[in-house]
Image (cartoon, rainbow, N blue to C red; front, side, top):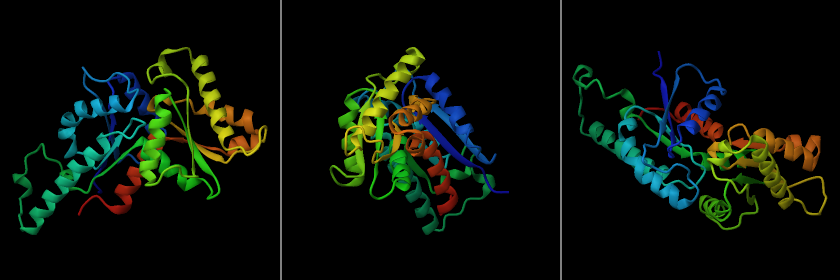
Length: 285
């Protein structure tokens, strides 16, 4: 029987409520029972709501040392913060060192009998490992969907993310101001307020931001079509708000065109990408 595939989903803020909200999203994907998910929440004291790139950096400093025990037990890691989060490259570096250590052991013909391996060391410790963030995963998913003459955009939280995510996309693409990216529109809320404020208020702000984003892709005012063919949910805390984005698309573009816009949940995109990598490229060297 094939060994389980183990994926760690990392919430780098201290909100256990947000971590719990991610679980049904992952469960809804109906992966085989041999795929095992573990959820990690930043320890306290930590960053309660990641509302800037500076918060992201601080959260990485807090979380990274606490993640070491999980590296040996998992094949893949998803950083559930919609930013260019420093945990992504930091975890890649740690995983690369583990892989290099294993490769050196093989090269030197080191053999350890199974009964001599400590019980706390699991087989994935000698595995090829994969890391991504929900930002990176959602951008890649959007590009896989949109036609070459169209593009995607992001609906996020506070205004600071408009510039921060533009810079993050530029760096990911390796070029500035790509014609494929129509930018980021924001709600003016932080991640915590997505859950704490009245649902209708949040829904209205999500719809307003979505409509502004769609208008960026219109060549004429009042046109019922937009070059924005995919919209990324720019916060892990936007779980369940895809319906507000869809309603805004339909109101702005009509039933057919609005219904055709792809709404990308970075958590779903990230989990799917990691599962595909483990299955497609393999677990072991």
